[in-house]
Length: 103
Image 1 (cartoon, rainbow, N blue to C red):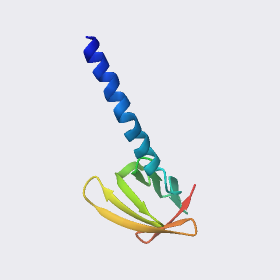
Image 2 (image 1 turned 180 degrees about the vertical axis):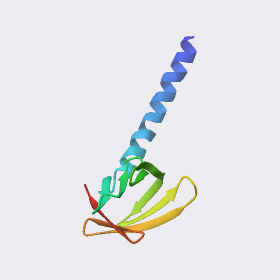
Image 3 (image 1 turned 90 degrees about the horizontal axis):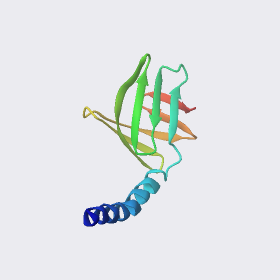
Image 4 (image 1 turned 60 degrees about the horizontal axis):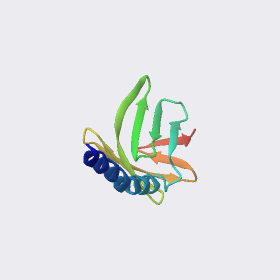
């Protein structure tokens, strides 16, 4: 019993720095947060864990997936396999013919 407990503690201690490092890597870009079209119809929430949720009209979770920001460019990979990209220009997200503003 003590050996199993010690193994659990050791495993937790070994993974903690990796988890902290991953969180630090994920938060290195300034674009985390909510981005919305002027009419409010399309809403992208860029989460700090490199996941996103896109709402369309009344569909709050119309699309979900992962994203990666490199400089001012963003790549999206929807969980269904769809891909897209965009660019941040002067704190405005240009994506798929849409313009989204930080909320």
